[in-house]
Length: 228
Image (cartoon, rainbow, N blue to C red):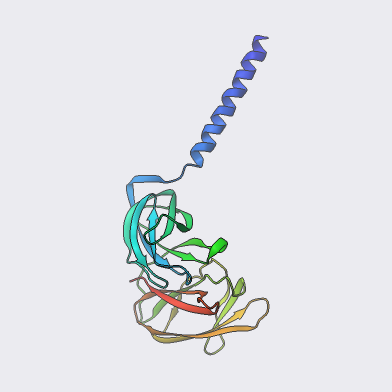
């Protein structure tokens, strides 16, 4: 009987410990008190109004962030499961939210995209090493809900720049010549052309993210974010 009672107590202790560990692992806004990272904030949702931005209950952008606007890099505390919230300017209404895991010294850009039930926050780590040899350093980000989920990107000559990029994913970095970059977008599965774009005024030695999103009329467009 004593053995049975002890066994039951051990099982109860294990269950409580498991619950505690599980609760601890799910804890949000675990801030590194000695760590900092850099974050840039972008409004990529064409149907949204101006936004504010909060991370781990700290307001980094206090309203005024309109569609295609990008903040400068802001230094803030790093940590795990940092809750990010875009809120309609002047209200507590959360337009979209997400979580970020980050470490000391890195740089991220976060984007608010979509609308309604598809509204979301996506984060991408940035490589801020400056390109050399007079080149421009770029990456593409697919944030369109109306375009195919997978896209191929070709240059003006019809050569592949990105063989496939999926929705909510960023490509690797590419190096291109300064000036105007002409790109053609094709559905990966359909192989149909879904848009041709000219990205002007790309400067040598600069780093850009080129993100695809939906305009307010539902058409596909492309915008650029400067990182240096």
